Amino acid sequence: MAIINHVSNYYEQVVSEEIRQQLAKRAQQPAMDFMADVACVALNRLPPKYYRYEVDMAFYMSPNELYDVKEKVSTVVTEAIAFVENHKRSD
Image (cartoon, rainbow, N blue to C red; front, side, top):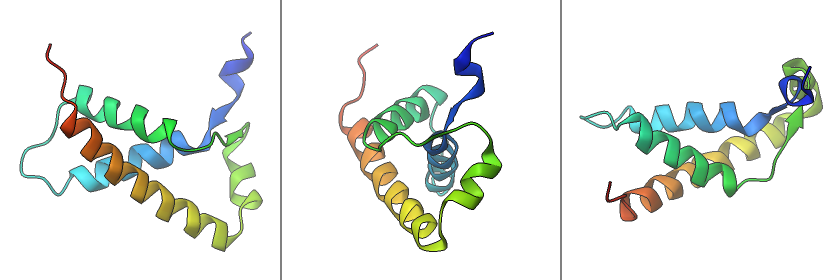
């Protein structure tokens, strides 16, 4: 039994949802590789926030902190999209 199977980073799900929301506005949906690159860039710009049970996060964060997190994630994802677009891979 691995410990890693019992912990999660709160920002992973929030960043994933924000990427989907921001990219849904585009006429052509980007490839999964692009979205994964955006997620990596965004997550590397956020502090880790680990939890064992998702319900713990609901009680741990105040409404103000939750708002601040969502605003920060929105900004970081916007910046990550621009970064990945400007640093395209040459596969």
